[in-house]
Amino acid sequence: MASPTYSEVSSLLSSYQQSHLLHHYASLPAASQSDLLRSISSLDLPRLYGKILPLLLSPPPASTSPIAPFPASRTLPPPSPTIHASLSSLGRPLVLAGKVCCLVLAGGQGTRLGYPGVKGSFPLSPRATLFDHIFRRGRALSASITWLVMTSPMNHAETVAYFRSKSNYGLPESQVRFFPQGTLPCLSPPADPSSTDPLSYKILLSSPSSVALAPDGNGGVYNALLSSGLLASLTSAGAEYLHVFSVDNALARPADPCFVGLLEREGADAGNKVLWKKDAGEKVGVMALDGGGRPCVVEYSDMSPQEKGLVDTDGKLVYGAGNICNHFFSVAFLNRILSGGSTVDDLVRFHVARKRIPCYDPVRGEAVEPGAPNGIKLETFIFDVFPLSEALAVGEVRRDEEFAPVKSADGPEGEPAVVDSPRMAREMMSELCKKWVRAAGRELGAGGAELEERLGRIRFLEIEPGKTYGGEGIGREEVDKVMAVEGQVDFLVL
Image (cartoon, rainbow, N blue to C red; front, side, top):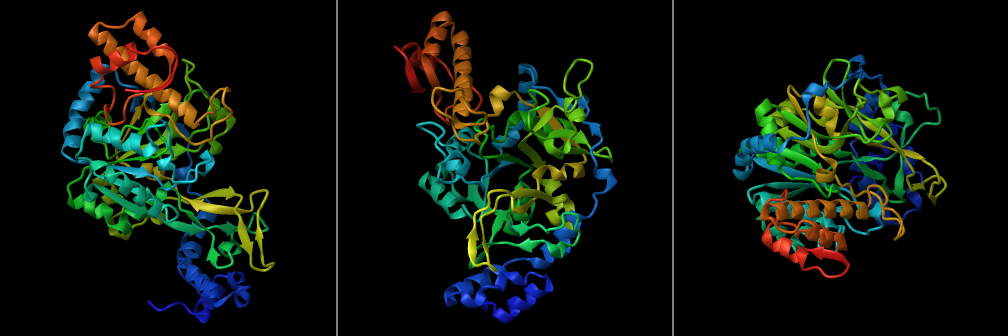
């Protein structure tokens, strides 16, 4: 493919009033000039200025405005052991037959954790990374699961190399597939905030020779599944469900047979695991119904204080089914909404995230390190297709069993764990492991108060990732190791 010429790129930019990107072109070395032209020519300006921004700047349809709570009758509470077993008996055969695939959203870096690598390779404990916990837990359930890992262009190569170093967790390459999500240019908003002219939004440069790009949000998964050919691959392989979740939930249960069973029982084409909010101030989106009576997720920032605090006659939050980025889709549903050449641009609205974006000013010829938000990133949300579902299953999970997000750096040692920090996630995982050991002790008629005393000596208890999926298989060996503990132990692996 021929390299783009200055004349071609200049003409293209002029059409969209973005000529500022070449203001410094003549001052660049020849190699940097070529890099800049390639970076600009890789942009899909007709899509950005002819489709995305016009839709973003137009008033949303009245029918999309969320106006009603999601009915409690349509949300399955955390299942009792009997219901859990019944649903799992429906879902497990599909998982074991390879009909349920997993898609891990892993495009992020560990920057907020103070970690230099991809977030999934973050060492949550001395023995295991986030990827280790997720993939080995999945292997404990079934070796038949096909895994998709959505990266970003910024971390794709590093992620693939990490999995190669782990030998793909013992899985053949055909069962672990990697694909990058798309990117969109970062933009400088117009001086007039009321402007509805798409061309008044100016593209930013990250350096003298490259455009500032950002991943297009987790909703970019739909375009990426199409463009990578992976949706077609899943379809031809006979896959029936795709479980999509974020890499930073240390307690995610891949291909959960219980939830797959719920989908089967309800005849659902999509599903959402939710977590009931601790209080009105917990900053998560919630399930609701839009103006057309369709299921949707309402962002915390889009709700009024009155809506956030609304309670029923029992004092329970009405808007309390919190979204935790843990979704299921039937492959048939994905094929239906993406048929006929449709892309995510045709299905959902883009959202604006105002950010501090380090950039290069081509007019002043200098780098800019903003102290306040200076630009916007455009992103889509994966849950924005929920209104297209003909039968959405919603199930509530227990916080202590299925949700330990790792998003913020640890605070000082000796102080309470920071919310959503690695230490808080380790504490939650440790408590869950202790719960499983207690249950094993009761089954064996062993331990009691003595077992509890030994567990109290262990600061962090971890059961080897891959040994169990949800506590099954924990028995005499693990109980005996705990009973053998002497003195205080900071970290113990069973």
